[in-house]
Structures are given as C-alpha cells and as structure tokens.
Image 1 (cartoon, helix red, strand yellow):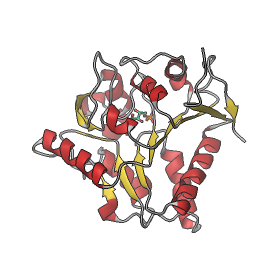
Image 2 (tube, protein in one colour):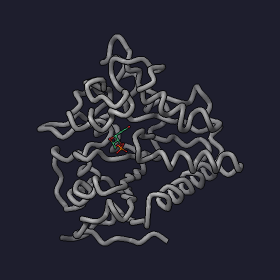
Image 3 (tube, helix red, strand yellow):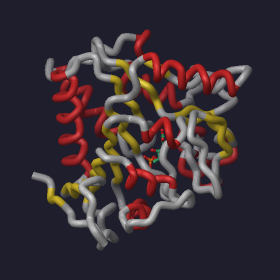
Image 4 (cartoon, protein in one colour):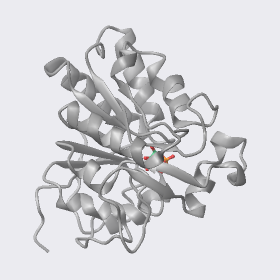
Length: 257
Ligand code: F6R
C-alpha cells in the first residue's frame, strides 16, 4: 500500500506524555493565533489533556481569552445543567478553570425543543465563526468519532443520533454507573462537519482502542468504522500511547520525541 502523508501516526510512551505534548501544541497554536476556533471532545481520553491545559493557563503559558470553542456532541433530552451532561463535564475539566469567554463557548443544547433547528443553529454558528481550525477527537471502541456511530450510512451534518449499546455503556460513569440511565440519543456534529476542520488531532489511549486504531489505519474507508474517513483528510495526526498502538502493523510509526 502507498502510504499517504496523512494521517500521521505518533506513538507516545504513555498517556501522560501524549497529553503533555498535545497541550503544548494547543498552547503554541493559541500563541500564534489567539482567535483560534477549537473543536473539543469529552470522554476519558481528553481529561489529562485538559488538566495539562489548565496547568499551562495557571502558569501564564496558555491564554484562551480570545479563543472560540465548539464541542462535538451532547446527550439529547437532558439540560446543560444535568450532572451527566457533556457541558457539565467541560465546565468541570476546562471551562471553569481557564479564561475562555462564555460567549465564545458553543455547545449543542440537548434540551432544545426542536432538535433539527438546534442542529442547523450549530452548523450556522460554526460557519459564522469561520470554521474549526483545530478539531480534537477521541475514538469509541466501535470506531465512532463524535457520536457518528457505525452504520450503513453516515450523516454529513450535525444531527440527532441513536446511541449504540456499547456507547451508552462507555458513558455510564456519568450517570451513576447505570447504562440504562444514559440518554438513548444525542446530538452530534456530522462527518462533514468534522472533516471540514482545517486540522484534526485524534487521540487514543489504552488497549481497548487498539483494534479500531489498527482498522482505522489499514487503508480502507467504511461507514462501519466512521473514524476511517479521517484517511480522506489532508491534515490529520493520530496521537496515541503504546497500548492503543499495539495492533498497528500497516503504518510507519513516528516515535514521539
Ligand atoms: C465525546 C466524543 C466521543 C468520545 C469517544 C471516546 O465527545 O465525541 O467520540 O471521544 O467515545 O470516549 P473515551 O475517551 O471516554 O474513550
């Protein structure tokens, strides 16, 4: 197989090194372009990254005052103030700890009475902000990005989605450990929304991601593994720890410095 220049694959010794390098990259970008538009994920993977960004901010090494953010997704049918909402997660891990300006923080409203209009509003706001400069992604064990779950067809734009059982299970910790209490639906950026970001960083840590990371890099593109579409983007970095990289055979790995 002819290896394209993107996705670029970098393997870090551990999760800590990955988070450290990624936070530094975001801080450098903020320094170069203070008005940068960031696309942000929730989940376990970015927790250390957000901790590192908070630490850089506290040391005066990262300034978010003019930056804009758009989160990838939100559960449908719950309010932003719900303890299990992704909005609550972001306030706890990042928004409440750095100097982001509240009017430049954008989120899908899971309690919107008209979800279709809400999704359109989000698309319009992303366009009005000039598009996303840097989209940071995690990856589900089933290969989802955002909440674009494996399916026969994928939605291009922000949409309402039914969550797979494994995704509700993976989010149970936010709802008292009970997958049955995880909302069955969500609102999510679509594949096209994500793919229009100028630069994409996909972060993957832990053995549970090894299988889908290997499939993502194997050269095929399939709606059954939504993350495989990242192979069609010209500027993607796949950043992972040794455990997540353990099943990769087809891609040359760049060892992290
Ligand atoms: C969350 C999101 C999801 C997660 C993915 C991995 O905003 O977009 O695609 O990135 O489910 O979740 P963790 O990091 O918890 O393994």
